[in-house]
Length: 273
Image 1 (spheres, rainbow, N blue to C red):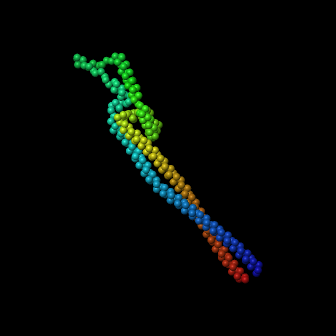
Image 2: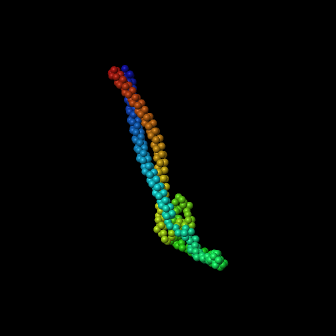
Image 3: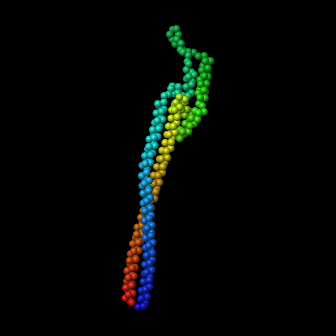
């Protein structure tokens, strides 16, 4: 009887130790479950942040469309100014041919013969040479008319046009001079200033549009990447949570079984006593 009693006491101690170990494991499992729940809550918070960022995408798209409309408007204004500006025949002919036309305009009048026929004017070699020299001198004088201020305006226009997508490779001096000449060099100073302002505005709007489009595409890419990583993390946390729940149920079942065994052993000890 005493030996059986000692064996029962030893078994009881073993069961108590097992019960304490199971309780520690159960506590550890509950802590792990709590951590998993916190991770799931953080993941849901990140998902909500992604949803709030996704709501900002339509506003960015509207801003991009507004910038595109402004860009088209200012480009149309530039075209309107080009077509509405009064251009004289001398200006339309260009800077070189204008002076040449002025210097060569006094042509000799055709003289009528007594018979009523028109006589064709005849120039001597000296007159033709003089006319060609005058034309060349007029062209040289026209080139000299481009003062330092106008040259600086040409450089400014080229610098502004270089920022445009249509003039990314730059424009030559002839194109820029033609642009400035079409709007006048001295009589239409306000038109030239307006053109420069419009061109600068178009350049700024183009840069803003490119920046907005880049920002929207980058945000969409980041959202897709973050959404994919969060979905994977959520799935992993859900699997871990299910596993921990299963382990917790198994530990609870084992604890109940050990409690029943302990009660039976106590009953046996009472009977033995």
